[in-house]
Image 1 (tube, rainbow, N blue to C red):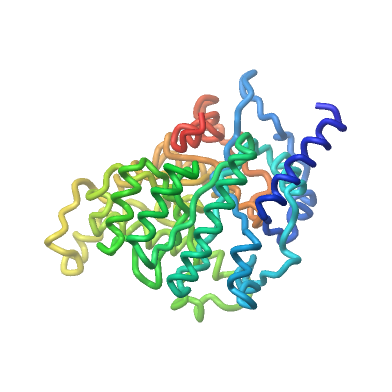
Image 2 (cartoon, rainbow, N blue to C red; image 1 turned 90 degrees about the horizontal axis):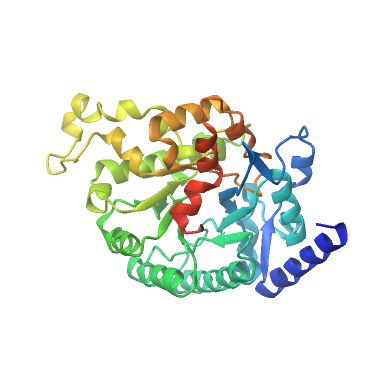
Length: 367
């Protein structure tokens, strides 16, 4: 594509973004990415002479109209707890970042900052976000898809929102936190939501939002609230879904876990011994249909584990078919999310193609 044509195309994208009121968080992106060593993996990605469509299922955005409903509190929901207009960038910059990452398509999601809000306010936030996101991805379907938001503090409303999002708005499922006001997703009050997700074939993307009780232990240097807290929250969420029998009750649930599923895939074998060693802590009324570690083979995990060795282990534990690319953009955790996939020499070319985009396309109906 000629430079002038590319510029005009980006201007068209930008006009569409402005109409939708979408904004992407920044946090130094893509300046931090461009400070990284240059990578040979740039769009397009070619494997064995074949162009590969890369799909990133873990990418974030915000909408000004929705966050404005929080008033001054809106400044608390940005990256690293900072928020503010200085953390927003325009779509033109986002497309440049995607190109530098060798990402063809992003599946956008919004971390649920509304779970602790009053029900009607949360419902208003969710309605705006789903409408705006649906409008945006419909206009730019070649580069973006989206996960809906849900008012999970009201499970019946969340069930209705999910059905609307999938059937009428063209969204691919929903992004959910790790808990809702301290309640794990295995709580029976959420069963109607999971039943509806299973019925619709909707994907649920679990992304942690923080465990306040742990905050006093995670203060200090190192961004531990995110570094340790986020993977731990995902681990806890998945273990509850396994041990409380939720995945047996809803075996058709399509769940994607952020950050490589937290710590669970790295220590899955321990799960199989928990109710042998600590039988008095395990309910006699819940009889799982298979070993706890085997449930990982029916879940999906993003590839945000940083190194070829970590990805090799994750693939060995859960199966190549369960892996999809995740970058966490615009959080600058991984500037080049396809590189460690391409560098994992234990994967065949077909397996790399599946992880880079094939699995996500099939899972989300993006083929």
